[in-house]
Structures are given as structure tokens and as C-alpha cells.
Length: 225
Length: 225
DNA sequence: AGGGGTATAGGGGTTTCCCCGATATTCAGT
DNA sequence: ACTGAATATCGGGGAAACCCCTATACCCCT
Image 1 (tube, chains in turn purple, brown, blue, cyan):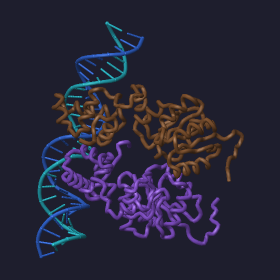
Image 2 (image 1 turned 45 degrees about the vertical axis):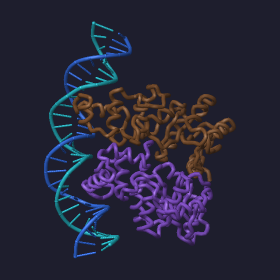
Image 3 (image 1 turned 180 degrees about the vertical axis):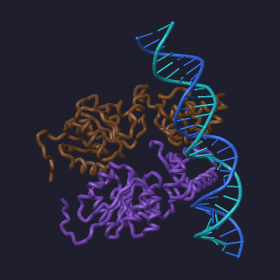
Image 4 (image 1 turned 135 degrees about the vertical axis):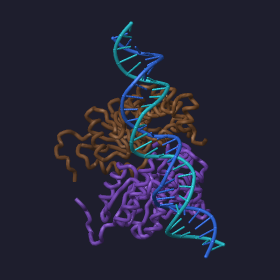
């Protein structure tokens, strides 16, 4: 079944992170057909992604941007800080330079559009394996450079919140209850409540529906889900 | 390479429509591994999809909702009018009943979430081949029914709710607590809670943040307030 | 060394959530 | 006119969430 003609090197390990199972299945099918590559895990949310990276130590994480719980950019930031050896290939629908700049700023080494051709996926992966960076061909690197040098990473209005607070806010707005959030983050319910209270103070919003509306305004969550 | 053990019947023809090349490539890889199925074409926009249907006469069109130019629902409506023999399987990220109802109303025979398991894809396709309809398991058919039987073509759904329920929903989404709502309407807190529970059943949404997101989707409240 | 910001957590009282059942009204169908 | 479904109104009760307080540990910064 497997081609794998020149099997001397051990396969590169890939972790697949995307919140759509069917898309993961599709990507997995594609990657399984590429020699020298092994998908060592997959998951659909950011927290699990971090746990899987710790366990599996993949060479490359193929990371979607929009994820429940903890978005892809936050995952990237965390990984690039705590697992600098793991290389990150962002998979996104957005070609806007501000998105790309934010991803690179968060520590990604590659940026690929979901509308990319299949060959670009292979190209991107091999670039990352070889230690090079990769930008999707459809993206203008110079424009991105300007965004990066302009220190434009602060696009979101939710910058007033700490990463933890933003994460809690996102989970609340997604409809997760304190119990679920606490167990997902391995902290006590009380801690979750404390974070909620603190971010409420930050925002001056003192009810849950208001938090949800705010999260939608700043793009932390998407009402269409 | 191909399995295709019992090759008596000619393979079912599938047309793939999605605006993301990589996703198409992935789906193609998945479908190519299923016996008795042949992908006879793919494209990334609605107009080309119509042209391809005319040329290839597929059995089933696997149709993403968000497409450039002409969205998936418009494509579905056109196909079901001009090519009623071609069956339509919608592939969507949205699980909200109002989305499902709109898709079915546009003439789709199947509705699948991008977060569905791989097995559901096979199940859905075979259902359509056999002339049956298919709804993703994660979707509550009864709730969708209510949306369908209500004046469905009116985009601003929420018509499924009684005026009272709509009023309560709006107040909740504005951040008013049950007590405030009750006193404002001169009813007991228990009544307000009952209304909330009833409208939750209607919508198939069982948490407050989800209600808020729904209210925003249908324009009942405005996130910018 | 101290101070501010952050993340963690418990105590305890209030409120909401969400299950159960109950009653009255209205409106449609036979 | 009667039946039945849908709607609107309430209550009990327990689990959960909310929201006030305090408290620790850590890190960064001056």
C-alpha cells in the first residue's frame, strides 16, 4: 500500500489541528499518500492540541486558525514559546496581510491558504522540514513585512484582556459552563469564576449575554456557529 | 489500486463544489477510496458548478454553502429547478436549524456538517443514491421541521417563536436577568423561566450564550450595544 | 525589598438554571 | 360543541452558576 521508496529517514511527524472532522479526514488522506510523512495525531480544539504536542512531539503542526476554546494563533504563540522545536504551519481561509502578519507574529513558520493547490501543501511541509519558512504563493510577502514592521499585531480590541481572560471569555461565549471550562483547563471552578469576574471588571460588562455580544464584536467567536 | 470488488453497477458520479482547493483535494482523496464512487469534476464557484452540472450530469453534487459569486443555496435552488434529477448534498459549518431549513428549502436532499465523522459522509451519499434524504446526526430534525413549516423563505427566522417568546429572548440577549424581565412584564420569575425553557426547545439551543448568538444572527439584538 | 499585575483557589450567600407538574385561555379541527 | 394542541401563566426543589469576600504564589519591575 505504502510507496515509501527511499525509506532510510524516519517519517516526519505531523499533527493535524482543525475543528472540522471531515476536513481533517481529507487532509489525512492527502498526507497519508505523501512518502516520508506520518500523521501522528489530530484534534479539533486548541487545548487538546497543546496536550497532543506534549505527548507526540510532532515535527510540524498543521494548525487551523479558528478553533473552539483557544484559537489557532494563541496555540501558535504558546507552542513557539514552550516548544520552539515544533514548527507551525497555519492553515487559513484569509489571505489578508493582517492575518498573515498576526500568524507570523504568533510564531508560525508557514502560512497556507485553504484555497492553495495541493502541491503547495507538499512544498510548504518540505520547506518547514528543511528549516525554511513558507508563505503561500498567493500572499505578497512585502506587504506582510510592512505589517510586521509596523508592529500592527494589536488589531483586536480585546487586547485589554490577558490571554487567559480572553480564553475564558471565548469559552463562555461558546456556551461552555464553568464546570466544563474548569475541567478543560485543569483548574478549579473557582478560578474560572475569578477570571470571569476580572474580565468583567476590565470590560465593564457585568452579565453573560453582554460578554457574548462583546466576544462577537471583537471576533473572538462567531455567531454563525 | 482500486478496490471496486463488485463492479457490476457503474460508479455514482459526484461533483465537488467548494471554494477551498485543499479541502476539495482532501474530499477527493476520501471519495476516491470509496468503491462505486467517481468524482467527475470539481470547482470553486457557483457559476462554474452550474456549467459543470450541465456537462457532466452527476448523480450528486457535494456543495459548500459559502461560495464566491453565487452562494451554495442559490446554486441549490437553481439546480433543483433546472436539474431535478441531480441530488444535492450540502456541506456546511453551520448547525443552526435556520441554516438547515434554508438549505432544504433551496432544494437540497442532504445536509452534512464539516465537523461530521467520515462515516457520515458515506452514509449521506448512499442515502442520496438510494433516493432518501439525509440529515447530519448532530441536527435535530424536529426543530428543523418547525423552521420549515414556518414561513421559511423569510430570512429573518425567529418566526418559529411566539411573540412572547421572541420578546423574552430579546430581553435575555440584552442582558436582562430573569428578575428584571419578570418585573418588567408583570409576571413571575417562574413564568419567564418557563418561556426561556420553551423557546430553548424550539430552537434546540440549551444555553444562554447560544441564545444570545442566535438572537444576533436573526437580528433580534445588535452586538454593538 | 516592596509593589502591581496575574493566576490560582476557597467560603458563603444569592440568583439562575432546569427538571418536574399544574392551571387557564385560546384556537383549530371534527 | 367538544376535543386537543398550543400558549401563557405559576409553583417546588435541587443543582449549578453567579458574585461578593479573602488569600496565596508567582513574576516582573523599579
